[in-house]
Image (cartoon, rainbow, N blue to C red; front, side, top):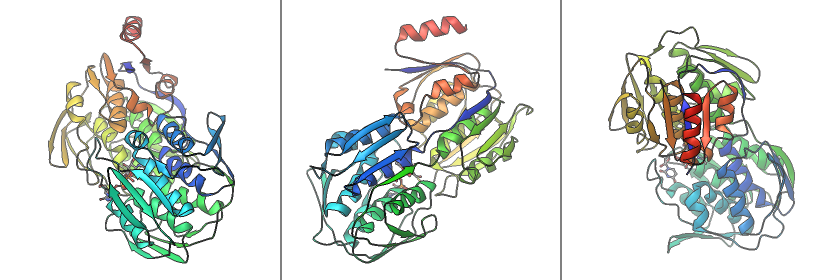
Length: 432
Ligand code: UD1
């Protein structure tokens, strides 16, 4: 299993360019098979989760041509199966977007039921509620969800909880339903807007994405398009927090600063200097003796993203005084705290609140990434720590970050992806 090996303690400095948003791309890829025409998608991140989604699409008969690392051509003319295997759902929950896409286009689909995951139970009752409201019959048995409809008819759907996945899945099915659908209490995340923009570029009639009421007028069919995915706000935020934790000075390029407002607001509170440009943000913490404590609560967009919560905790572990981080979206998202403690962090978790007593330095240690964002947080801690850290299970980080170690190296970090204990030892000898 690959590991990240890091010799910490160096401020990150320079420029980094952010790739396409993984979570937007997952939805857009699924939606691309809602037409039999050819679709060209650009600015895709070259990360594991995207490759799994492309594999799932190929498995059901879509033709996927990689034009280059960040561009694919999808031809959904010959979809031959309406059933998505557990093998894919097990690797990425987002393959359930194929349920909404296939149901919309073929009025029938079957997807393995996703289980819980490292960060919580993650039910899909709201997706099902939405499909039922559109007239689909849902059957759950033998670990499969089957959705079938003679006709999909527009409906008025209220989501009891703000859910990105349910909003996008219902949006896709409703796009090809008869008549008008209203989704109330919809998620407002940038990737919901991107998925809606993509569908509109294929001929859908969706209004209001980015607000909590989305209105969809069903159309008979969708056509081919060319589309470029928005930049990844979580990848951007991760580099911004790495700059803060290492007292560095980093300009993060190819971002939409508006999507990063919650992240920049919190960095300002910790004492970092932030400069916003049209499509870049600079974080300067080089003049700061110690970061300043603050309080954060994760909330649906435009609130502070739960996908930045572990990275924020890693930063606040180095802030003077006592900080709190409250997780309000997922019930089990503090599993990484024990690993961070092994690097010297002083954090106590009470229910969904992490109470953090800042320390001056972390110390390098061997830790394991429990999931994608927590893995990134442990890397941030390793970059800020004195000495060597080894982050096992780098695989999780590679699910969502393209060339993470290379981008960090370009900012001056001593960090490498080692594919064996031998390679890790070689790196350690070289930097020691
Ligand atoms: C998406 C993101 C994930 C991010 C999360 C919250 C993708 C591929 N993943 O996940 O990275 O952490 O948004 O921003 O885009 N819920 C229900 N019933 C449902 C659906 C959700 O109770 O049917 C609950 C969840 O358990 C959670 C909350 O709603 O407590 C938000 O989940 P949701 O927004 O659906 O997350 P995902 O779409 O799975």
